[in-house]
Image 1 (cartoon, rainbow, N blue to C red):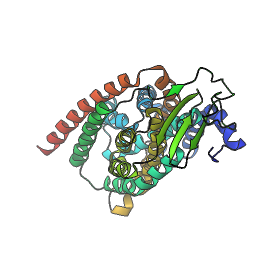
Image 2: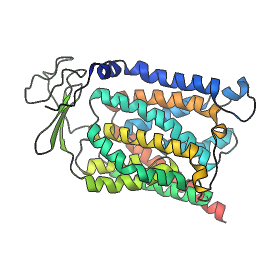
Image 3: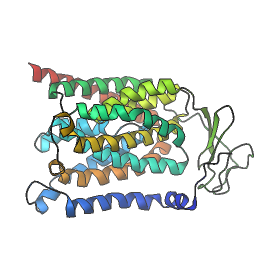
Image 4: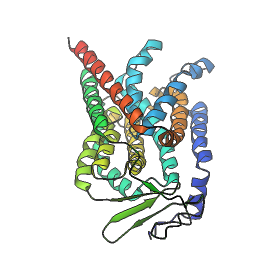
Length: 360
């Protein structure tokens, strides 16, 4: 039995995670309204200008968190193509920054929900984050100095690759087994399955001497896998990390494929991937806000952040992150995956056309 048990504080947090997570955007929005630096004096009209972003980002966050990919994979194309139809076009670095800030909240919210379900391998997630960090920083700094046409071209390539990989990925939920004897808070009756009394419901994890992992989620479903395949995953997460910093997404799309390719069960892969994408999104957001001056590129101060946009996109992404685990359980993930794959392919073509138009 693993010694990695939850202490009372952690158990309380997970039990009431909906309250804590939903308070986070309230605190964020309140802080922004009271203290965020803006360019000149602003009034109510400024703060309510982009209210319509809330439903758009709520839908986008629910979709991407259900599949386990980066939120910016939908947020960034939305800000490039749809946003200018209702407002002035945004600069590429601003688009990525808004996408990353929103994604960081949405994926953090969803990550906690997946942890509560017992579907996150935290040891594996922290290893993957550690390997991706230098590539995320490099990609974020690179975004300040590349021309807009190159940005759109790379974005198109990333989406095209993500579309291909999504179509190849098997996200069916048929790799777990469930015991009819599992009870709501007492854990599975089967003595061979791990059960951590400190966790909510029948949940636990056990790793034997050979590295074989047995995990039980709070619904009583059990999953068996190993943590082998680090080299393959490192290659995927390094390339994905570069695009994560550059365009706001990439590590989630390549990451989920590498986890599935190394035989990590799909629901555990989706949950674990959330942690990786959330932490790398937070890191990339910080570099995008403060790092422009380090490479002699666009110097983005806090005052240039479109606060009247993020006060709506952050709560929407957070709420979508909480909804996603329930959608993942209720719907066929393959249906959503195929829809997103087709959407990515269409957007990538549009980005290539836009890049070609800027060259001609």
